Length: 314
Image 1: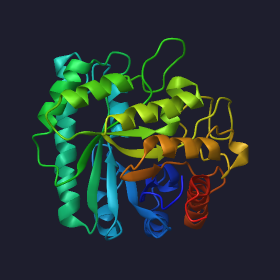
Image 2: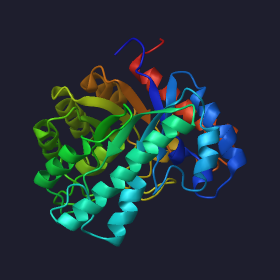
Image 3: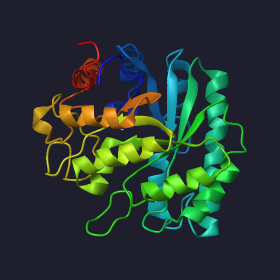
Image 4: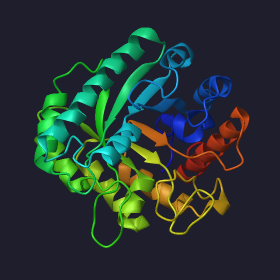
């Protein structure tokens, strides 16, 4: 692939130490510095029961003006799944499904608040097909039909595929298969899109070539809006145990990480995806990163690895 890459949304919470131990000074340096990196259009930010896990008003004052935001409730979904195994928009249990739908209505309210009270704009909201190990396509279709009727302030609604519950090995998320998600999206009378994460597909398939096939399958629907580069490893390493969702870097950015995501696989993924609207980069900070400058260098190294693999700018 040659030519410019699609604009990139960087996952700020995967990289930032301030989400675990609140440090508004560090976060105040980090957010604008990430948005200033070449090719970066904005940030992926978490919804964990609210706009910000520590201080929503601080976030509204400090999120960089002009940034695109992708809001992901996945950390909240996983917290709720741990407390209630019925919880999720694809739940065959009606109480579990309705609880998840109600939480997404709160997300929609916060999307409007971000647009009204900050200089940023939410352009993407991710949906996730919980519950773990027992999700079903029919209730997902029902949830999508309901969710599509709400005011999302112009944000694109995407179903972000996470690793499915498959036989033969443990799952991390254990949500619906990509095929089931595609069927539900296509059956909904609304413009839902798909979003894939390379690392999560690798956790599911245990096969890098199969990840490329998943990306091609999603692209063939005409609904693939984005692709996030995030690594995975078949061995335990500095970012965690094998086949866990540790947001590993690209192999070229940190050769000691054990990440499977090398330049050849990045190029294959981009070719399979075709002309997606946005790319994502979701990488954890290096174990030694403790300052905003160090985190920004880590993210910049990974962005350069994506550009080098794509041929963009060369």
